[in-house]
Length: 389
Image (cartoon, rainbow, N blue to C red; front, side, top):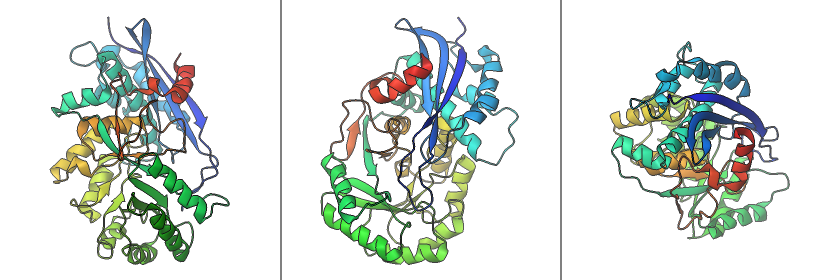
């Protein structure tokens, strides 16, 4: 039997919320949910791989339906198999999707490709009968570690949200087992953000560390002013101060902020990631890289990014992806990344962990489930099953 993809289905789903960061609000936010249907039968059912794009970038149904899904379905099925002929080859499928695409311009198409790519890897691991993190570890000759560091991302601006509510939110994350929490800055004045930070630090005490995220809001002058304010606090990191492609701004900040900085979630190719390493002044002994495979052409491209980092002397432990989804958890466990973002209360049902998985000491332990394990997250799989059948 020739292993083949028989259908690629997409549905654009709302993940709207009244929250905002320093740059955008999420009142009209959407995401694409994709099902890659194969002709392989496991346990009496067709194997279906699922994927979706991370929050912060809208659903890509148009691109998926008009360009990328069709290229896969039109390709010779034998050309998409792996060398054994018993499974699909994600890299060959990725190459089929990118047929007749010019280089550069890594914008919305990287999200569309990354969404399908997630579903393909889910299907491949299911066909192999293994958790994706085990499959990845085997392919890279590494030891898989199902225990992964996670931090709680929140602290958004919200209508009527005062300091007491912000403190209660952060305390709630600590009570659920997180040891690092993150809040937004840049959506109010510097003085108001300083009050917010001090209120959260007072609430956390020694129970957890705090990271802050400006979501690319600042020009150089403002980024430096914040750096001078923030360096007085024991922060876990200072994230995405300026425009993600302003590498000079990022490099200049190192002169004013000696603590860890984090960025990269809005860089969507290994070439852009390489430019950050070349020109962004990132320090491999302390800074954090947040590239998100679901937004940046998927795991096939993410592995090229990791190879680039190795060539430049960076440890993969410095990577803690954006997005809060199970795909990045699988990559972290399989390839030894430094951890993963988590959204305990927002962007559901797409974030979070399989049912029954709890955060303990700032870590989760992934269960031994085939594929990415979406089927074990009941609220998410209810939506997936409606699409995939």
